[in-house]
Image (cartoon, rainbow, N blue to C red; front, side, top):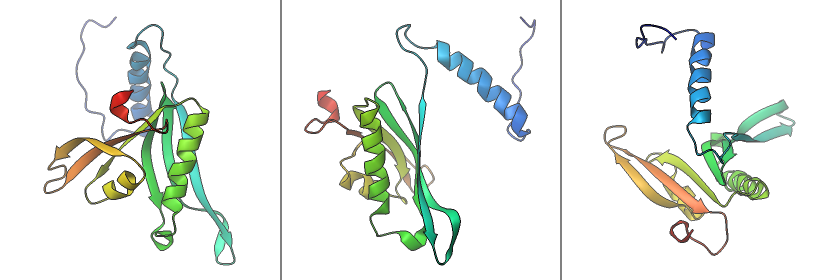
Length: 158
């Protein structure tokens, strides 16, 4: 063990240095849990792929990035190309993510979004706001939402 430990800001460092710090943090997170739980988040990545006369082969036009862990789906990012919005593709991505999460044994889902993004979209999908951070960024707020993946149950009754 080192005799001295200091705090070093590596925010502007090279990707390998940042990845090394992330690996160290994840090593600790893997042990900071009850002994009966394993730290094994499983990636869940869905893509909107366009193929057609005006599109390059394998052109990705949006998607969903998340993971499942300990019975929950965490939706990190969701986006649909501006030109394709309003066609129900975001809903289809969310429904596909929910279905895959249920297949993996998940009973709930959670995410966060900003007031200038899509809180209403998620609420129409059955998500409820359980937290709010005002003035993040200034003049807006960040919402934290959750939903049950078990039909007929709300989060508070689980």
